[in-house]
Length: 73
Image 1 (cartoon, rainbow, N blue to C red):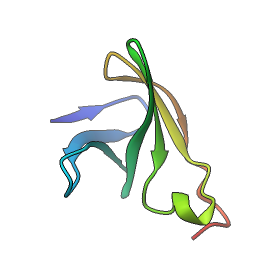
Image 2 (image 1 turned 30 degrees about the vertical axis):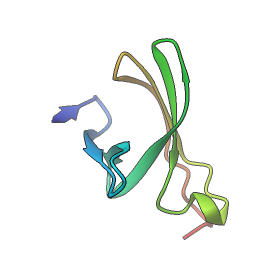
Image 3 (image 1 turned 90 degrees about the vertical axis):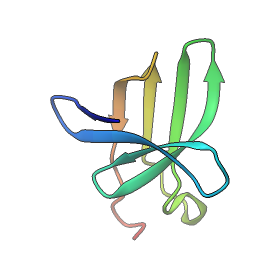
């Protein structure tokens, strides 16, 4: 599925291991934490290098985007 927010176009995808991911502007995000209907997603593309980019969703609707990948890649 592909969705559009006022800022970006994103889609939910599946990783090679079957986990749910978000693809946004050429970066992939994996689900870090789930708290009821809320989820936090971290940059899976460069998280191991200290990337702080993240997304927060409520019921699969993006409510927060931090696309600060600068200085990491």
